[in-house]
Image 1: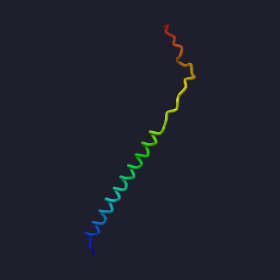
Image 2 (image 1 turned 60 degrees about the horizontal axis):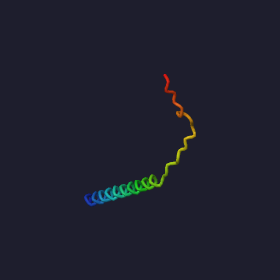
Image 3 (image 1 turned 90 degrees about the vertical axis):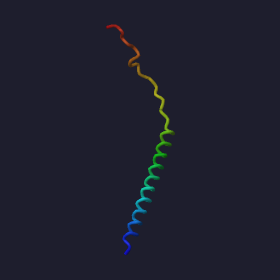
Image 4 (image 1 turned 90 degrees about the horizontal axis):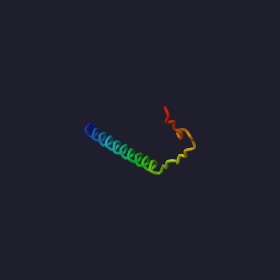
Length: 58
């Protein structure tokens, strides 16, 4: 049984797994950026009169 060969295969699989995880994170990050860029802020209408009259006399 070749123990060194088995550890080499395990190392290669770990590296490949890390690369796949990194690629997945990049894809998710791009999806989040696209979602944020496509989102539009809803216009806010000021229908309240709060703060429109200020009493300046003390």
